[in-house]
Length: 80
Image 1: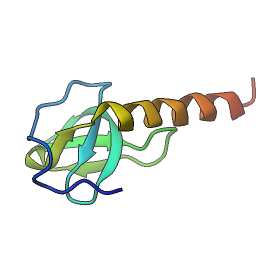
Image 2 (image 1 turned 90 degrees about the horizontal axis):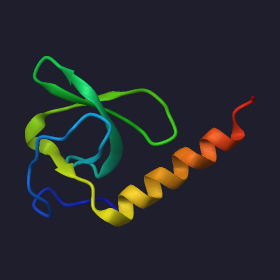
Image 3 (image 1 turned 180 degrees about the vertical axis):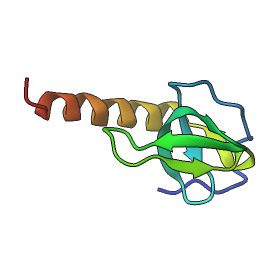
């Protein structure tokens, strides 16, 4: 379910936290900033994407839980 741009307030996320890109509802882990953008990475890995700071929203608890489960499941599939 995609978040609407007006559903959540804009925020300045901390590295390592989960946030929502309000433009399309994607959830990602905050990896840092590059220039004016916040870089987000999908749960479980993948290519980072740039999100304007005004479009970053805090991820609600349900989405954070889902993202963490995705990461744990991904870690369980990696060769040791």
